[in-house]
Image (cartoon, rainbow, N blue to C red):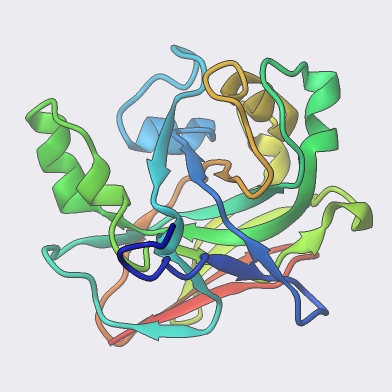
Length: 226
């Protein structure tokens, strides 16, 4: 047996302090997981359980990348997020079991073509092209979970100006709850990434600007747009 085309390169994320890479299987993202962000987007933060959307694995880019400004948008937004990298598999896991599936943590930027998302919402259509475009998942080098669960501030800076600033403890659904809930919808696998939601203050990034996500204790996730 032979492949009719060469197999695609496996998407991967850098590992802090190592030349090793974390191979990415799938990317899941949690919507509206900070109350103030839910409110700024016009929603009641207490009205629903976690919901999820996805990005293709090859949307991942390393911190420090310089990329073209995305096509088909005039309103690119940053969304600073804690990223959870899974090293174990499981379905219908409990919250007590969930943290054992985690391999590591990273700072991430869930880039969003906000104008396309608004059009999709108005037409009651999927968000795929608003969220799952090329280079839309910026991730800093992962820190192994053995070094502890991240705590403290999550921030986003555009050209050095702080646009988002919150505490990870402000998540509506904590990491263990997110994993447990998602594992009831799909069987989670080693290599899966979960973007855990963004705090209030999402906003635009323009051509030539540098956007950096910072989380206390983790490597930053930085990207510049041409």
